[in-house]
Image (cartoon, rainbow, N blue to C red):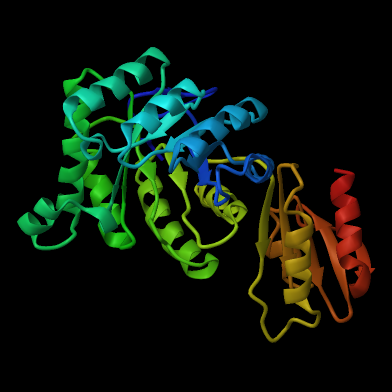
Length: 349
């Protein structure tokens, strides 16, 4: 698919936009003031494949904590600031790679100019984050409801403020909990500006519903070439956000790495406990870095043929199963040993 080309912006040790790979982000849910807990979570996110992490900075103590956190991590950290421009300035001093702050919410143009000047000196971009849940009252009155046009107008107002003070290292997010509004908002904004776009369905929900909503919203836009960085917002452990985000990219061919797992839905021909086996294989392979397609199929007759594009897989029979590679059967194994034998074969590949 052809990506819409946006401005390329540096964020810490990587880039967003242009020809840069699409990055996956998350946000810590620890108290940023608790340095040890926040560091631990960021390192776990890194291990899961997080490219950029965001931390809430509600006060000066959280801001000071950043100074202890940033030197000990290897991914860019974004300071999430609301209203207080002084926290933005101090976060820049303490080494953040980017800010998430809406210039229209921090007061006078002089305050905006101070933040923009400091960010520019340190080569730090600013992400403008428009959210359907906090839309300006004037826009609500103008449009009568939250809608894509209102969200885009809000984003353009914030962008205009930064441009007035000659700041152009901008990333934009326009998030809504309504998937259709979210999709239409991003389609509208990309026709008006060429800044990198941060995609996400805000307040998407629990892992089940949230994954569905995020996959539809983010996936629909990415499939049309829209989007430069993503965050899956789940009411869950932030690690789940990274796993889901990587799978969305992988399913669209936008990320290569790790296990590509496929399994059949089972049917009346299935004679092994395929659901349990599939879940166990998926869990045990979750942190395997090898770039392999692994299949778990329920039928000995059709399994190897239907999944012949897989590098390796299982096809179940009655109390036993076959291990196959590229559609060719290599081993027959008792059901209770299938998963272990599959893992051994993968280790040797």
